[in-house]
Length: 334
Ligand code: AHM
Ligand code: MG
Image: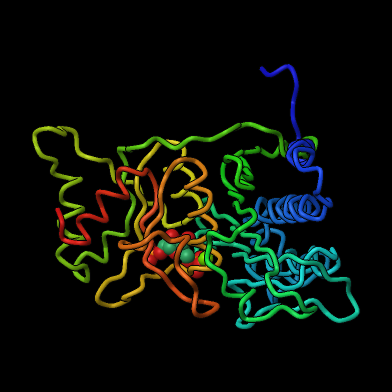
C-alpha cells in the first residue's frame, strides 16, 4: 500500500506549479472534468436500477424524468462548463452544431471537444463505457471563436484524456507531460493516483477489430489481420483477439497491455465509424504521450486537419511497432 495518496486535484496543481505563467484556468477545466466524471459515474453505476426503481412513462419513483444516459452525460458536461468561465465553445458528439457559451455567461479562451458517453449501446449489458475529452486553445484573437478554432489538428491540443466507467471508474489524462491514471475511490469521492506515467509497450500481443466486417475489408487489411493470426516462423505465437465494442475500454486495455485497435474504413464505410475531433484525436494524443502511435492507415492522426465537425476517420491506434507494421500493409509495402 502507498504511504501517501495523491488526489487528482493535487496532481493537477503540482503540474500547474511547474509553469509560473499559468493562470489556473487550465487547471480549472481539468477539475471541472473531474467533477463531471464523478457525477456521470454515479449515474452509470445505478443504470440497471432504473429498470427496478424506475417507472413506465419515463418517470422514476421520485417523479423525476428518466433520461437516456447519453443525454444525461451531455447535460452534465454542458452544465458544468457553461458557467465555468474557462471555455469559449464546446464540440460534442451529441450536438449537431458547436455549443456556444450563452452571452450572459463568462467565457474563456479554451475549447472543449468531448464524447460524453461513448459505447452507450453497451450500458444495458453492464459493459464498460467511457467519456472522451480534448482541450484546445482559442487561436483567433476576437471574442467570438472562428472556424479556425473549431477545426484544429490534434497536434494543437493542450490536454486530452478519457474516463472509463468499468469495474472501477478511472480518469486518464495528459497535458503533454506523460499520461497519468486515477481511480475513483467512491468511499471518499476522490480520484486517487493509481497509474503514474503510463508507458504502453512498443509491441503488443493483442489485436482489436470488429471482424464481422471482414467481407467489406480490402485485401491489404485482410492480409494484415491474417499475419497476426497466422504469424511466420520467426513470430510463433499468434496475437489474441480482444474486442469489447466500447472504444474507451478497448483502448484502455491495449494501452496498459500493448496491442493494436483498428476501426478501419471498408467498402460500406470508407472512413470507418469513429469521429476525428472527439474520439480519434484525444485518444491519439494520449497514446503518443504514452509512447504509442495513432494513424488513419497512412498518416498520423494528430496531423490531420479536420474539415468538418463530425468528420469520421479510419483509426489504427496502439503500440508503435504494431501501428507502423499495419501502415506498411495498408500501403502495400508488406
Ligand atoms: P457511439 O459513439 O455511438 O457509442 O459508437 C462508438 C462505438 C465505440 O465505442 C466502439 O469502438 C464502436 O462504436 C464499436 O462499433 P461496432 O459495433 O461497429 O464494432
Ligand atoms: Mg462515441
